[in-house]
Length: 374
Ligand code: KG4
Ligand code: ZN
Image (cartoon, rainbow, N blue to C red; front, side, top):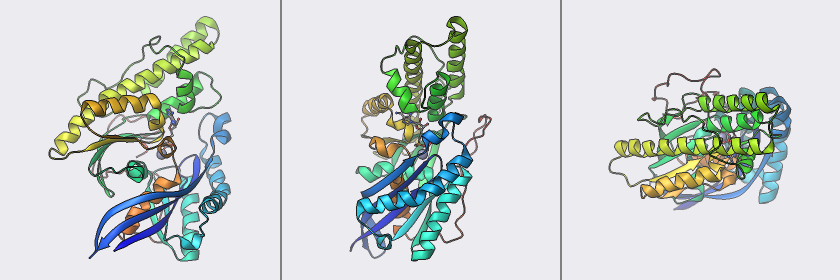
């Protein structure tokens, strides 16, 4: 029998207040569920970047307040775009971790209010699972697949075997690449501390002027490290300021281009290693490769990752840019899948600021001073 459901997704784990509505269609026969497909209905995002810029990074308390101020507005806009009423949805899905505690609490309480008030099912979604499953929302991507999840808080190579089983093959041992992009933007004095800004300035720069380190690339695994690269950029900026009293526009462009080139090289080398590890784990599987997370919105990174996929004669999938950065649609889709399989939460749902996708995977030593986010 063909069925369909409407899933509402709520995302407040960091600095984007986002709501999305997804329709999931599937075939269900004698408890066997097949041919699930997702359709984007509508979404709305309130980006908080402007609220945090003057502090040089996301301020958790400001983020939490902005989430609770904007959730209702985002919900109303999402429903209005779709011309759908809240009564028509089947399940409320909300990011319940990992992330900043204030934001998670805002989102979860909002979701619980809808669930309790309208007697709707509730599903707590792992933010990383949301990113990892996103390519299936827009593409016909079969399990298992290899994924590079690169964002502002995470960088992991994952073997995605089904919506509920995601094995971590490698991870950053310190910072995430998005964090490094944001830090570089700050170091060179850009007004907006974001990777998109660094990418845009890098376009006219000389990628060979600065030679930055490529940590861990010779190691025979797919763990990554970005903190040494970040420090190297900081040292180059300091030296230039000492020598010439400040940075010229040309310096900014060359630093961005050289830094981006290093990130592209690190991710390229590590993806080659991840392919080998994936093949060892799944020797029989014909698999695809996909990227996701905010950093996957970077064109140079997308192009270089696609090239490696081609070298391995593997299909490559990258979600549209708007689905790479945080959004409510990925949470609606990931939560909708769990609902279809009867895996729901209740009003005891609690935030988990740290929530590994692959709990059996051991901790990696050497994570940075802020600690790994999972
Ligand atoms: O996935 P996301 O929206 O949030 C997290 O889960 O962290 O990723 C945000 C990160 C930020 O660090 C942002 O600077 C980075 O993704 N980012 C980019 C680009 N667009 C966003 N990094 C490099 N190039 C871009 N075009
Ligand atoms: Zn994210």
